[in-house]
Amino acid sequence: MKRNRINFIFVPILVLIAGCVGAFCIYQYMYVPAQTKYQAALADYNTNYPDSTPDKRAAALELKKENQAQVDQAKLEWAQYENTIMPPYDITDRRKAYVELTQELDFRLAPMLQSWIHKTGVYPLTEFSMKQPPISPNDPSIAAGPLVIPLGTVNVGGSFRKILGHYEKWNDFNRLVLVSGLNFKGTSPNMLGTYNAEVIIFPQGSAVGPPIPTGSAGAPSAAGTSGAPAPPAAAAPSGAPDNG
Image: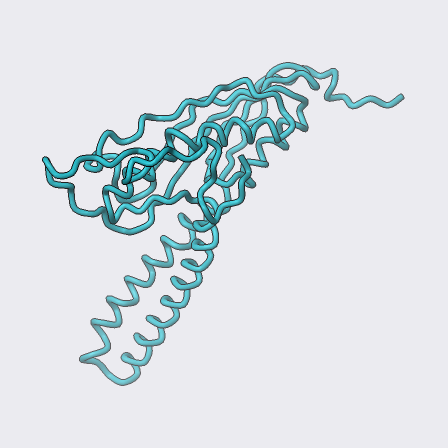
């Protein structure tokens, strides 16, 4: 009977795989460059359009239109991912951002991660713990730009193929998870897979709202501005499929 050689060959730390999910690539390598090109075209347009020849004005206008179209397309593709894998996190309102981020870190994310690993065909050997949520609406962690939540080292057990499949399935999780540095130890089907992971949250809004004055009504309840009970731990935000 022909047997799979992987069952008999010791596999040291041989495999190093960097995982970059599609959403991050779209934002980092499509939207950001498109926005940069558009700003350059806009500057060229503002320089050449008012006081130049008709040909130069027409060329500047055409370049501006082309780059605006690229920005619009990148925004459209990014919005499709954002609506699916980004939790509510509106930084234009500090109170709202505080509540949303606290709910995500205290009630949602860790149970979703733990449940997801169980569904990917491997044995989870890691218990997830989240970074501390902001302590107030004025916490400096509420800021423009991506919010990175380190998950540390993730350990899973299983066969070579199952661990590889689990690693790739992070692309189907309903949060943006960046994984890197997959290492194997042991012999299949009883191998240990180890890699690093982090969750990346892009906020809604490009600028943080003004600070909340000291001595005002105070920080809202983490369960909501009215102090209502928190949602169930595994509840996913609206608009996102429940993969947890």
